[in-house]
Length: 138
Length: 138
DNA sequence: ATCCTAGCTTAGACTCTGTCTAAACAAAGA
DNA sequence: TCTTTGTTTAGACAGAGTCTAAGCTAGGAT
Image 1 (cartoon, rainbow over the protein chains, first blue to last red):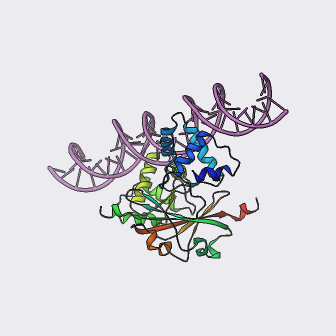
Image 2 (image 1 turned 90 degrees about the vertical axis):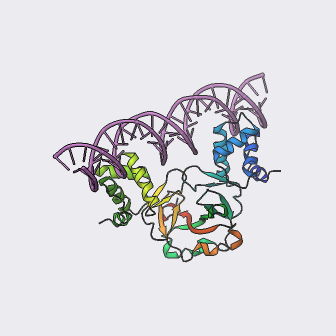
Image 3 (image 1 turned 45 degrees about the vertical axis):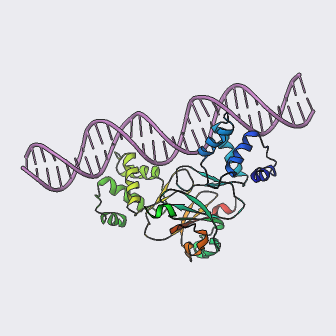
């Protein structure tokens, strides 16, 4: 059913009912939820689920590398279950809608050696901003 | 003295003593401070300065387009006074050190039309991550 | 000069997001 | 069964930022 659960199990990570509900909630959507939104939705299926478990579980999934943590607006973090595919994000300045996108080139290539300040540059992510179709009229 | 103050004045924005201290604190450094760090440093020069004024002033400078707000770690926002020069950021995964960098290509060019989902894409920013020279040994 | 008004600043209360703690609980092995 | 280890829970706590109501300041009108 849930591909994320399969990936998590590979890490010898115990899949409890709570963790399963959280993983399925995360994966079941194509928008990227905040922890609070995941809590709300997961609680619809398992009302005793606590806030602490949701935060703990999300942090562990991030630590395992199977979920990506996005800090895009400085308020709350969002969680992206597609940690295995390289992708970037497109955000609407009007309504905050977020889409996953793919570029045709790797940005790390564009950073000249003399701009690297001695760093080893491992990865990069691009945030594109603009207006979505609905917000362009306004 | 402060170029940011000059730019702000152009917007017919009243430069009060408090605002001047905040702008000069922001511009006087090449690292990007959080609001709390700016408060701390600005208070060294003007002890009565209040937290609310710092937050209000930073938000207004962002709204005027003269300062950039960076949400890079999901905890606190950082403020970048170089809103007029296109640049990106390089962050160390080890210690959090952040550098401004310049790329040789514009990411917006590399986002194919069919990946734009009908958006008008106005700008983009790249966050590069890796290890700084000091953290590579560890 | 005095008054008025608009805008600026302030302290502190409040909200929101996330973390920590201590206790209860569950599962697996000896 | 007992123990050990890991998980979940409620609620207290902490950090970052916003809001509110009151006071302050500067500039214009009289």
